[in-house]
Image 1 (tube, rainbow, N blue to C red):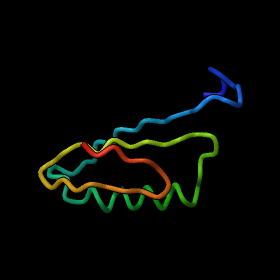
Image 2: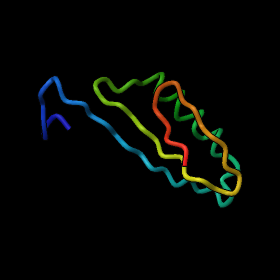
Image 3: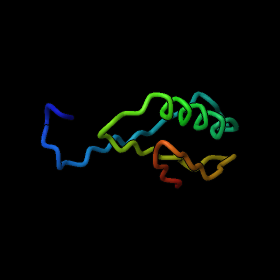
Length: 72
């Protein structure tokens, strides 16, 4: 992202769509908790991380402390 535009006043957003290998998405909430813990332990300075939580059979709205979640 810095190679594209290294200016300090630029907002950098990483929009992430994860397709978990979980047919019915029963464990999605636990997966996001693990990702959130990892991001808390390994912050990425200067980048706003946004996850897209796709609606599934066992859909639950997800909230993270270290990233933003768009719940479909």
